[in-house]
Structure formats: structure tokens, C-alpha cells
Image 1 (spheres, rainbow, N blue to C red):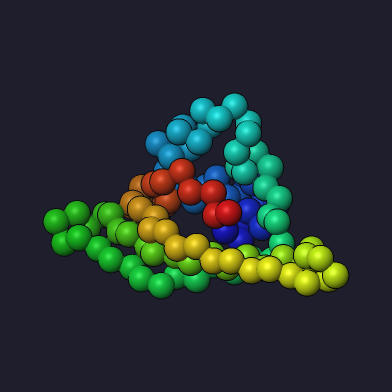
Image 2 (cartoon, helix red, strand yellow; image 1 turned 135 degrees about the horizontal axis):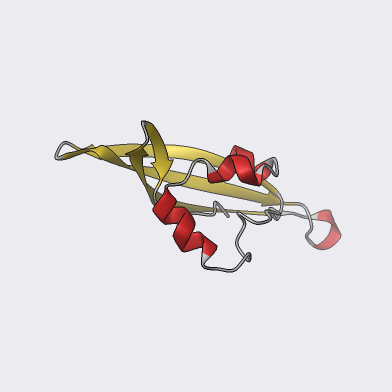
Length: 104
């Protein structure tokens, strides 16, 4: 998330599994791993992490992304939040995102 916000696309790609990257690369350069432009200020919150004892190299991370915009009528803004659960797996001794999650 922070690498994407900073525009460090190559850095962000290191946090995804090979399978997730292959799936996202099918978009032909249209996804945010090619270019990322958030629509305002964003904050990512981790609200839960769960693991499965049967699969110790897999976890599920529940996140909430809050987005704040200042481009409303007469300088008013808007905000919204959404929650989702992201699967992460241990690959090459690192935890990596296994879903095609774009964080926007």
C-alpha cells in the first residue's frame, strides 16, 4: 500500500506472489501495478489477522481502506471506507499478498 502510494510500482510488486502477479498482468498494463493514482488521501487499517493451524503458511488479513476527497461542491469533501479480506501466503520465506488486491 505504501509503495503504491509513493509511486514505487516495482517495490510494490515484490509484495505479491508470483501467481497473483501473473493474474494481474493479464490486464495488459491497465492495473495500478503499472501506474497508481489514488483519488485523494487514503489510510489503510488492519482490523484482523487469522491463521489456519492446518496451513501455517497461509493467513487472512482483514483491512479497511479509508479514502478522503476534497473536491466536492464549494470545497466540501467526502469520505468512504471499504473492508475486505486479503489472503497472504509465505513464499520464499516472506509473507506475500496472494490476491489481485489493488488497494483502491
